[in-house]
Image (tube, rainbow, N blue to C red; front, side, top):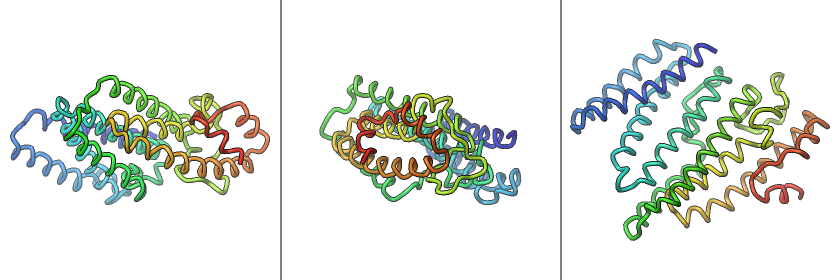
Amino acid sequence: MLINKELYLIQWIIIALTLSLLLLFDTVLIQISIIGSLFYFTWKLSPKRYPKLGIEISKINATCVVFGFLIYFAWIIRENHVGFSIFLMNQVLFHMGEMLHVAFYKFNLLKWGSYLINHSFGYNLAISFSISEYFVESYFFNKNYQTLILIGVLCTLVGHIFRIGAFISAKQSFHHQVQSKKASDHILITTGIYKFSRHPSYFGFFIYSLGQQIILQNPISFIAYIPVLYKFFIQRIYLEEYYLYQFFGRAYQDYSENTPVLIPFIEYYLRF
């Protein structure tokens, strides 16, 4: 566990170092040199520290340089694009949260893909569309309504708490993919954040995704996300619960009857 925590801490140090240096030196050429140097050193030195991880640790730590730059970029545009600034910082926190689970509890599976940045074509398309919508609409309309931004921030905060809370509560029993066979370390988790939702990571992602669109004040993306998210989670939860009933029997039935998913109205659709 010590090496896991060290590796994850180093990622945050790289992010903080990148951000600090970019804030300290505001000359573009120097900033380009800083980013280039950090890329080089993280790429070259990381495998020497963690030789078993090879090129994967190079890609992981180099990505942290990008995260540091994104936070810096969010900072410098905050006055004119406060919503997009918060959106960027939320994205960094979301992907670092995904890495936390693997780094701490599934270290043998650690890879660049653990960030879930390249989760799927649909995910990348949704993110790209929402960013495009924001900037197109920003040209014509004011998108800095503080009340909406505050509501969105609260939604994403709840999302982070539930999703990261699911990783911490479930530990090794959490899986990013639905498991059709019960692993030896797979146990039924009903404590921690699982006391409030039987699928806290799904509820967390659901409210986080919609919260991001509220922050961006994207009406088209907000409306479009709802049926897409519902379709995905209805299918996913239905399949996952089918296997959970097989794994844990009566114990899961009692737990599911007394613990909601929390995604609005989804319990109704899961009956069919």
